[in-house]
Length: 266
Image (cartoon, rainbow, N blue to C red; front, side, top):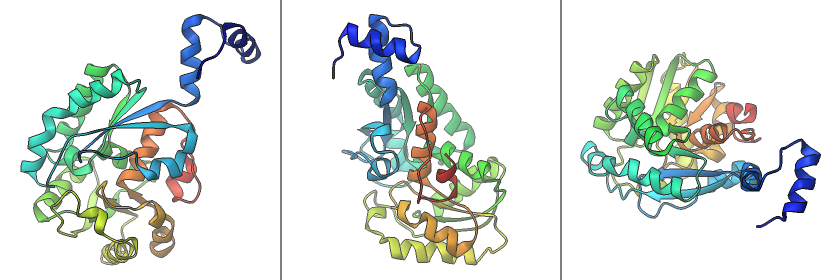
């Protein structure tokens, strides 16, 4: 899309902007900024959750790392690709970068997750967050301290998640996983089965003040509100709340109705 200088001057005058040739692109991009997603799978598509939540408010571009297995060895094999991937997204016009993959960013602990963010921020000069930081931010915003956690992972990865959450000052009352290792496995879990499993985890820790469903490959967006109604506590999950955090990085309206309490607040 292009806009004439005369038209831009008219628009800029109307909304109180100083019109310069260089600010034309800024004004247009601010209307519909690009969020860059560094994602674990190869050929990662534009997340349908993002389109459902934010429509035309945010554009998305992805960079796939080629992760094959949700294991420490698998994460080790792609971790060095994160910064180059983020730089590629920056060159494509991203205004902020999200490092997708909850387990990819928590598997070496809270300090390592923060170092990943800092390294990408230094390399790109952009606002940056990770999926792990996004869910922590979401849980904190909802006032959660004692949590129940349902995951896609095996016991080894679950143990690392527990460590990360405890380092982030949460008390984990229950944590159970589906035992999935293949990167394609989470997408094969039906929403009905995932809701039943997650509600069951919460039922084993009824004193928890929030439920966290962990794994970006699990389709959780449409079950957030049903789970909140069933469990009577806020529910935070990987992909929806990472996208919520991404919208906030871009400083666009992060509110979206129908997807749980936190996203409704924006």
